[in-house]
Amino acid sequence: MTATIVVLFAVTYLGMAVGRFPGLRIDRTGIALVAAILLLAVGALDSRQVVEAVDFPTLFILLGLMILSAQYAGSGFYDWCALRVARAARSPARLLAVVVAVAGGLSAVLANDVVVFAMTPMLCVGLTARGLDARPYLIGLAGAANAGSAATMIGNPQNILIGQVGHLDFWHFIGVCGVPALVALGIVYAVVWLAWRGRFGLPDGDREVGPVTLDRWQLGKAVAATLVLLALFASPLPQETSVLLVAGFVMISRRMASRDMLGMVDWHLLVLFGALFAINHALGLTGLPAALVHDLEAAGWLPDRLAVMAPLALAGSNSIGNVPAVILLLSAWPSPPVGALYGLALLSTLAGNLLLPGSLANIIVAERAAASGVRLGFAEHARCGIPMAILSMGFAALWLWWGGWMTI
Figure 1 (cartoon, rainbow, N blue to C red):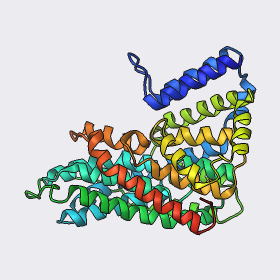
Figure 2 (cartoon, rainbow, N blue to C red; figure 1 turned 180 degrees about the vertical axis):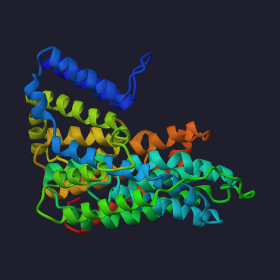
Figure 3 (cartoon, helix red, strand yellow; figure 1 turned 90 degrees about the vertical axis):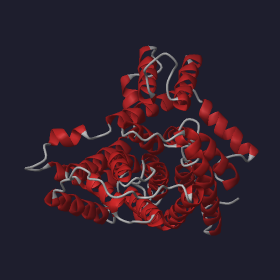
């Protein structure tokens, strides 16, 4: 049985790295789900073990944040915000700064994947209407969404999981990770500006873009719900309960149907999380991860040091993806020190900027842009992504060392 589990585990994470299997129209979520089903079918797991494997508080937080974000989307805020950003400034330098600031700020409070999914199409429309090359701004959008999301425990899926595993305090997390995230936003801006300087294109006069309707009542409700959520994070109430309470509140509406709000939830991501939890649990039952951690600890190679954590985060995020990499590491290393959790959250998130497949946010931007007629290539992204990731990770590592959270 151990051999079967190891084979299914290896095939799953090979699929995470490649993103698909040749000749098949199956994505990462489908690959993980099929592997989990096969583990049930061969008897490696039973239904009770699958339920025990799933970290439901993490899934509840993700679900609740997606519902809150759906409230923003339903109000027209994302489209309005993207269009206003595209029209906000006349010079490319100022416009890029606005894109980075808005994407980073929104991603710190709302999940970065949702922010880029909603903003990319309208941003492409607005920039194209001004006669500007949308590609550098899209790179800035993705890079800033990743960097900004590193600041908080609810900025991206891997941070949510890390916060739940370590029972981390929301506001203390910001105190540790906020400064490196802000510096990373500055690095994103500087790198994109230097790489594309003189090639942004010049406005050829505004062309008419279809009107965007902003429902101010629904937006006000979303903002109020967000403020309540932040206040609840300072209370002793469990974070997953706080998020679900706020999500339940926003679903009570006379204007927005709950079916429409639930339709905006990224169920694929939730299924991916659940399937990976089950697959990693099955591998854990073999005893192999525990033995590996013991051997690494004996050799002094546990990722509780920056010299191990940084390259591991860089390699994992840009091969199998930062979310699967974090799930895998935490399943094999069940009791990491608090400092290592902060390091993992920061470094795995910032490492996602290195290459286009490094984070789901990057992939979403590229795919949504292509659907809007703007092609963002691998090499174009890498030219900015590599220095963005290396410089921001370097500062984050120095910050973690200086603050005493991790050693070299």
